[in-house]
Image (cartoon, rainbow, N blue to C red; front, side, top):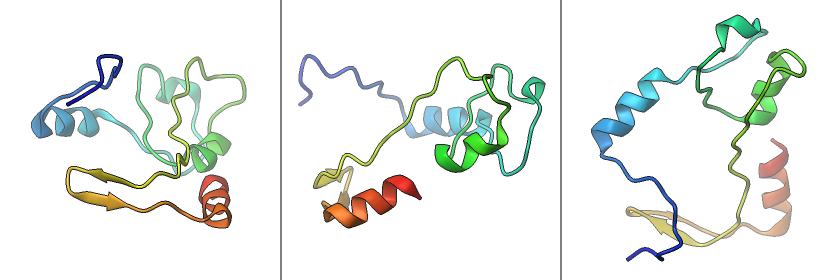
Length: 90
């Protein structure tokens, strides 16, 4: 059961696939017109070097929270401090 303050958006696997199919990935320099009204998915530290300077209005990043958790049967284990810092910088 979720906390009443939890603002997580839930949707079905099918809805999730529809969203992911609309996302774009970046592996080389792009012009801003190619990104307008798009959701970019990937490692922000690698992607940002390909995006024109001062062109981002909103960036949502998921940092290394370093928690033990079970997410729908997939288990994640807490990292030691060195591994978490390395993961965050990679």
